[in-house]
Length: 160
Length: 162
Image: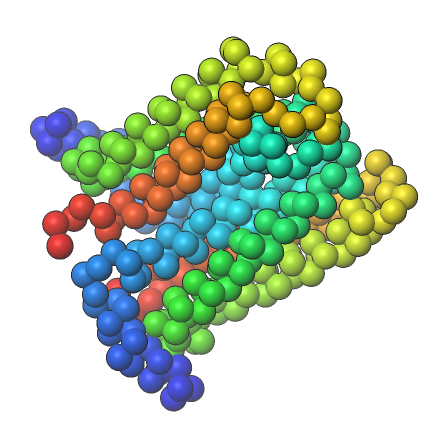
C-alpha cells in the first residue's frame, strides 16, 4: 500500500496536478474522454446492430470498427494509468474503482466472445442468436456501468 | 448576461434542482453515455462519407442515426439542466459559447448533408468512393463533434484566468 501512497504524494503528482498548464491534468482528462467516445462509441454501434435495433448493416462489414475499439482502449489505458498514479492511494481503497475495472474487463471479454461468434465467423448468419444478443446487451450495460462508476470516482477523492 | 444568470439562479426551480445532490452526477453520467451514442453513430457515418469503411452501404449506416440523434437529445436535456442549475458557470464562459457555436456548425453541416447530399449518398454502390463534397461534410462533422467534446471537457480549465 505504501507504494500507492508514495505515488499519490510524489513529485510527479505534485507537478501534474499543481501545474497551471492546461497540458497536464486537463489534457490527459480530455484524452480519457476522447478515448471513451471512440471505444464505447464503436462498441455501441456494433452491439446495437447485433441487438437488431439499428438497421441492417452486414455484420461482417463491422469488422474494421474493432480497430477503433483498440485505439480507444489504448488511449484510455495510457491516460488512465497516468490519472491512477496521481490518485493511487485513494483509488486502491475505492470500491467504485473496482466496479469500473471489472465492468471494463467484462465488457471487453464479452465483446470478444460476440466478435468471434457473430462477426468473424466466415459464414456468419445475418440473424443473430438469442445468446449473442444477450451478450451484446450485457456488454452495453457494462459499458454504461463503467461510465457511471468513472464519473462517481471524481466525487470520491481527496486530491483535487 | 450576468443579471440573467443571477435571475435564473434565484428561481425556485434552479434552487430545487441544484439542491438534489444526486442530480448533477446523474446528469454527468447520462451526458457521457449520450456522447458515446452520438459520436459512435455519427462518427461511423462521417468516416464512411470520408471514404473509409468501403463496402458499408451508406443507407445501412443511416439506419443508425436515430441512436446518434437520441444521444444528442439526451445531452441537450442534461446540458439544459446544468445550465438551469449553474447558469453563471456557462453563460460567462467563452469556452461554453464556443461549444454552442460548434454544435451550430455540426447541425448546419448535418442539415446541408440531409438536404443536398443524402439522396445521392443513399443510392451509392456499397464499395463506391465518395465525392469530395461528401468527404468535406464528413470531416467537418467529425471535427465539430470532437471540438464540442473538447470545449465541454476543458470548460473548467480553459480561460479561467490562471
